[in-house]
Image 1 (cartoon, rainbow, N blue to C red):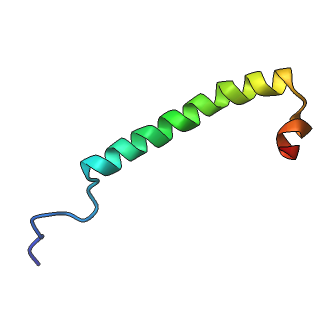
Image 2 (cartoon, one colour):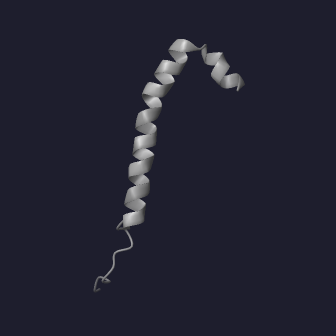
Length: 48
């Protein structure tokens, strides 16, 4: 069975940018939450 010219499993350029943005967002979340929890009580985050 011949393979199609475009593979639907490949990510488009837009998908790669979105993946990079998601990775950066998750990466920045760690130090922000660490600072936030050290300054405020954890229940403050749950209440807001």
